Length: 254
Image 1: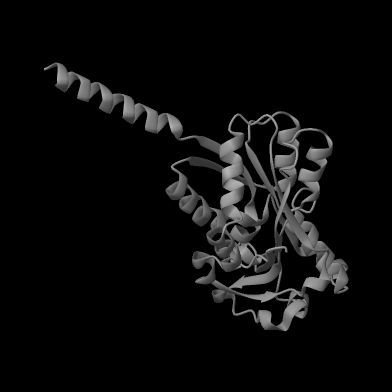
Image 2 (image 1 turned 90 degrees about the vertical axis):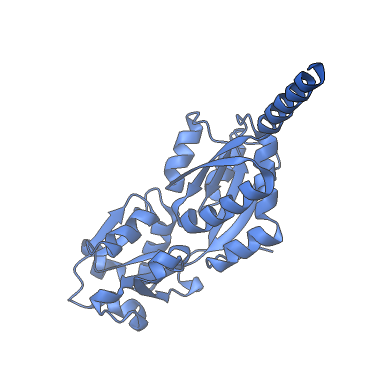
């Protein structure tokens, strides 16, 4: 009887210790990472036993929230400038800044519109197009890149009254998918997602048409799970993590 009780006690203690070892990290990530990160998080959780609470939104909004004490462990921005500013303000773990990807933008539309995106920027000039979706350039780096690309093509002044601004790049994509907008400029990573790819077609905007979308991540200094957060960054830099990011159209910086 005593032996049985000891075995039961050891089992309970072992179970509790295993679960205590698992941590949950809260990750604030730019919306262009939506599909790539769902795959990456699943692989990370499987490999480590840790859990990830993923929040997706605009980089600028997350930057403001972290400045005001939002309890995030990791911050993945579509513009490396935001985590650099947090680093300068002393709000990040020293040495944790990581330039994880360079993003691309595309002109995207649904198949049902019969719009020929192969025409490139010229397609946005067509009078049949009434609404063009982009992310809000005030706080979304992909929105700023879209505006810069249209200015580069001497197009912005012609179409600015047709622009519909999404809170972030995912919402801009949703505007097009739902039919609320005819066409738009979204992240390549969203256009390559299986669900989006099945619904529409895209034309990739030349990289030289806008400033590089250098994307950066950082561990937030107030994080109580810095080891697990660092583990997530290391996993992202692994061969598996890099393969997932590349699959969704991201360029991995050297």
